[in-house]
Image (cartoon, rainbow, N blue to C red; front, side, top):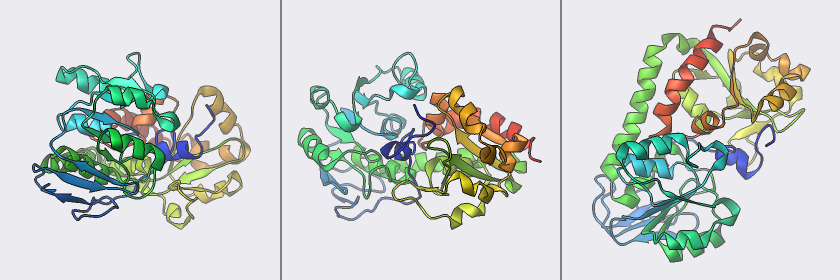
Amino acid sequence: MSSVWSGARVRAATALVAVAVSGGTACGTSTEDGGAEGGQDTAGGGAFPVSIGSALGTAEIPEAPERIVTLGQGSTETAIALGQTPVGVERYDWAADESGHLPWIREAVEERGDELPELFTGGEDIDIAAVLALEPDVILAPWSGITQEQFDILNDIAPTVAYPDLAWSTDWDEQIDLIGQALGKGEQAEELKSDIERQWAEAAESRPEYADVTFSYIYTNGPGTLGVFLPDEQRVAMVSGLGLTVDPVAETLPETEGTDSALIGLEQADLLQDSDLVFTFYSDEETREQIESQPLYAEIPAVASGALVASDDNAFVTASSVINPLTVPWVIDRYLPLIDDAVSRIS
């Protein structure tokens, strides 16, 4: 794997090994852009049928789903947190453990005493036959990259909840809202969002020293490149939730279309001179050595002083790139020691 992901992948991790996020909530009106209508009570969530619009079409859900299939990122975790383990999920081998599942998903399913979901190929070549064989009542894909053609096929198999606007661009809280609507569990979805905010607040309160620390979250596409994730991107929002402050320079950078980031080039690395910490990720140790050996990169003040939070653990990189009810507690326990160490190195 290259030093960072490109295209759809810099969106998916921003898909996890890709990019996306900001901060809104789903509408409660009937639209083709993410709203809901019908008998569904979007606040309390219990009545069906419900219609959920998206950029690709409308999911008409006649009754409370029992057999759930998920695509993209985050839907699996939210469904589990709402009390329903999917029967099938898109596989994500890059960060999976020996079970083939993402570790926080496996742990949660095992704790519930349920069977692990069936795994199937997703992405550009969704295994439609495998999805069909799972006999889903609903397909959840609000944070995914499914195409119009894929949606049309999937929505014929079962009501399919896609993204309200652009692929890989659904806000984390909006995703929880949409899944809560689809499962008839609107009130529980609200509780999940509040619980995420509570966990962040508790973590921030436990580290008052973070309040005055600024950071930038960066990535590279190879030698000579440099990108900065923007404040609303999910991995940045994860760190902000812990009480650190995004370096104001990020607000001044123009977004590279569709990435929730700004590709500025390594020649502009001096823009990060006021970032107390730098966050990033590497696909492996060899890539890390290659990137950090570049003089302009090594001269970034936070990098030079060792005030760098970086990981080449695929599972951690993935979990810290998406905000949902299962990743947040899994990440907080692992993030705080890394951040503590980096803060101690601020020069």
